[in-house]
Length: 107
Length: 121
Image 1 (cartoon, rainbow over the protein chains, first blue to last red):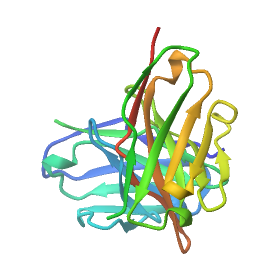
Image 2 (image 1 turned 180 degrees about the vertical axis):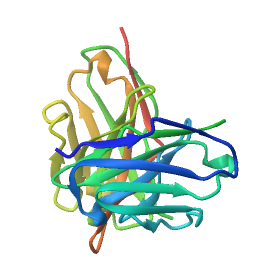
Image 3 (image 1 turned 90 degrees about the horizontal axis):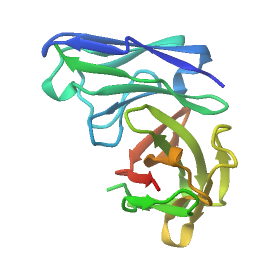
Image 4 (image 1 turned 60 degrees about the horizontal axis):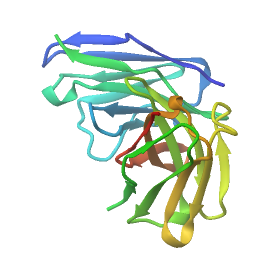
């Protein structure tokens, strides 16, 4: 089973700042099978990025994804108040696994 | 609008059985896999398994194999997650989500609103 590690565990930033979230896999993952989700308190997760770098429908262009192999990154170029949430990466290989999440909170 | 609507919150005692549901609408229910994801209180997301309602092909995470049963009734566009004997450790929020395969890409979208299951004596 492929294990995903996300860092940092918590990222404390101010609105307008840039957020860089990392997702590292225990073995190589096809970029096509790497997705990112946002979850706000009391809400279901929401798809942000699929295929490592493609934004889902309706996702603002301040969200971008990159990476390949074992290292992937989610970048939020300028944090808006509604972006403070938990972010999960997810991969599909022989099975599906999620990373433990990165919480982006207000500094 | 593509939508998944889950059944309401449940409070159960250890040892009881339970079946929760996830009803799809706005798309061809038999053409997409449906997955189940557990989120224990204050914790992250754990994939439990997926089912293809068209032929009921089901795959389980090794962590949940034998612990739960995933099923579907395509005649009413509904997927199910069931337990035969609940434990306190089954207390969690459970989400269903459509597993979309588009060319070389796969993802979970949309998600149901979640069903909170509380198991307590």
